Image: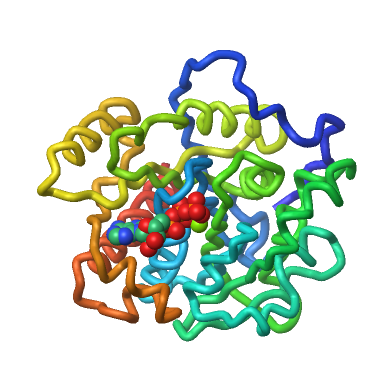
Length: 303
Ligand SMILES: Nc1ncnc2c1ncn2[C@@H]1O[C@H](COP(=O)(O)OP(=O)(O)OP(=O)(O)O)[C@@H](O)[C@H]1O
Ligand SMILES: [Mg+2]
């Protein structure tokens, strides 16, 4: 990965000028120039400025499912709420170095990385300090590139990591943290809850992705939209699925995550649902989503 120098505009203006939604472009893989270079992980940022749509649940359980099928995964908790860290059983006292220290520029990313109870799944935890970051680095020229720089060469050096995927859990806002996540990402994964206002705010999210693409990260793409908390007994859920598929077309993953009580119980035990109850419909859905994502990646590589 090559770091682009920061633009002097820095943080983008998240307010859209119009509401036209552009069909997101898929970009091909950047291949390493030599076989001796460490493999660069794919960075997928999980973003939606709407609260409670399943971003963190997807980060934890997609991360676990990817690790279960052989990938090496780092989850970066970029939300001051720290739900991804808590949901993976990381005690607050264990978060001695956090994503706050990393984005403030005082610690390298590798010092924040902790192993989880799931083999091949790691997390860079967050703390509440992260909520003050924007005030602290808001004037810095490289403020939008802190995460990108921190992930650069993550697989080089000691201890040696060989991450194939980095999943970034974003806060429910289009603030500097989310802009950092977008500037560092290859692709954005958008969870949408199957509810009446599902599409509300999606235009603004896509507009922001487009702005980041223009100003900070020209190869950024939308990886896909995952529908969450689907309830087959509810006609509204089916209507939302139909509307979102019509609006976003092939960008919507075939896998739909059902509303499942085991998914919502698991975080209180500090466990991903795949560890809490591997056989439940929620676990099966996240395994299918992981397989679909890997398949999409193969198609991108081939294309
Ligand atoms: N498929 C599901 N079935 C049942 N409950 C779910 C499901 N997905 C998420 N939830 C529950 O919905 C709530 C919100 O989910 P989650 O925290 O993942 O959303 P979020 O987008 O990360 O929220 P925030 O915007 O606050 O960060 C949580 O209590 C979670 O356990
Ligand atoms: Mg969350």
